[in-house]
Image 1 (cartoon, helix red, strand yellow):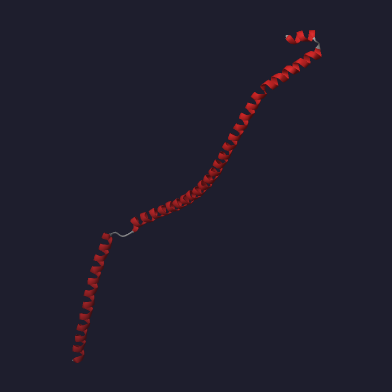
Image 2 (image 1 turned 45 degrees about the vertical axis):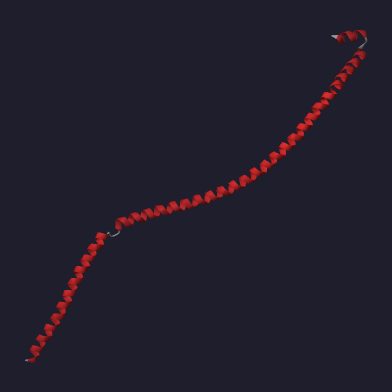
Length: 148
């Protein structure tokens, strides 16, 4: 509103000049405040730079941790492969054990075989003795027949 009044009284150039003066006065009056704000912003920038440096250090440490975790993952993969091999072996052994249980002779079977072998051996010993005695009898009979 005061602009319209000044345009009427002093003229356009005078009004523009007074507006520019007012603007510069405002800018110069806020200059100390702007300086304070700029100083604070610079301090904040320095603090942010320190924080960025710390975050960079943390990133490096996290990268190292990632490498360690990758190594651990590889070890777990190797262990998983070993467990898979063990599981296969256990399964194979289970089948082998089941086959052995079904087809292996028991103690009773072996005892029966021993008893049978003992009987056969005793029969063979008797037969051997009988053959020996029979051979002797035949010799005596032959002697008796040929002697007469």
